[in-house]
Length: 439
Image (cartoon, rainbow, N blue to C red; front, side):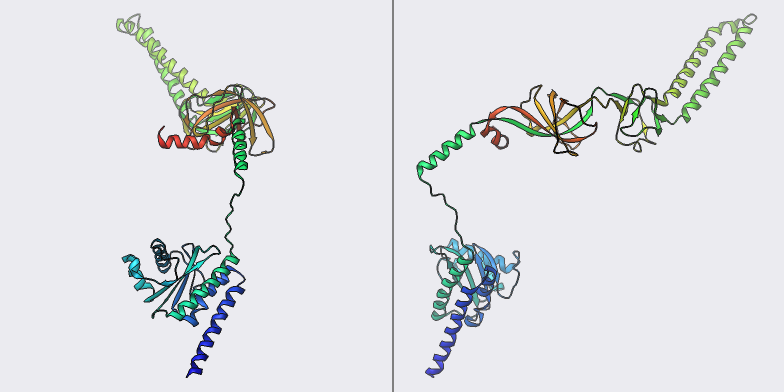
């Protein structure tokens, strides 16, 4: 009987040494975590085990990938937090249900075994960095608890060796720290030039806007974007069907009025009533002649021609073809390719004090390595909504050298006055804090 008992004890001790050896020989923290929740099941007979590191479940018995939103994972993490709050997370002992709230106890009955044992893991300084939740149907006896405590020391040592937690600490003398602070203050007081970035576009300078001369439908757009045109060249043709009909009707109406006036003039020598109507008929003839002239003018306006040489600046001809437009609606712009300026939209949140003549540098999206210098000429006092729905100030700048092609876009860097480096770095955070606190 004694020999049989000794054999069982020796077999259990051999398994224990095997668990300790596997922990120390683990090549990675993932391999060690798998061994901690699975390999001890044969020796201690637990139904399941959960490894928690810093309050988060890292491994579960029989599970290869831990699902953070799983009910059992959430239950074990809540239970570990409540053990920590009750001061019971640093000692290896059977879990006392009395220190857990009602929700955790209900989850315990539904998700875990009847008996649970908490086995903390300590680092070299004796601080708890994790632990094992071991659950089975019957309580752990004193011998098993002693073996678990000894095994926890091996597990903690192995985990620290694979994942060393060595927080960086500044261990400088106080005099050196004060010198470092003084240097930092001096550096933050160095004046630097303020600068902001804003989206920019190369636009015509002094261009001539071509607007719709009448209400109608565009029949044909005869130029292409950025096409060179000369004065008098046909640009846009409107649908003139109704205009021709209107002019023809006005011409026929004028002929009828003139015929009536001529007939009344001939009868005026013998008919007093015809003589009295001469002035009315003459006024009607002038009215019909004015209507005919107006109809002919509208017919002439159906063809829009260039008033000057330049290039046609617009987006797309297909967008205008067949579209009804109103009088004064902008169709395109005639610009001199040698005359261009820079237009920028500075967001309200990035606005700084900018004076006329401030330095501007343009970096085109098509050529970001080439710098195009410019000088600020105008800055709007009132912010307006941009096409993107953002409030921004409109800024105009003149190029110092030859301007890029009209229509190119990029990012402009605007340079303001000098300010301390601390203000330059903390301007946006300070503005956000002031807006949030209402100062």
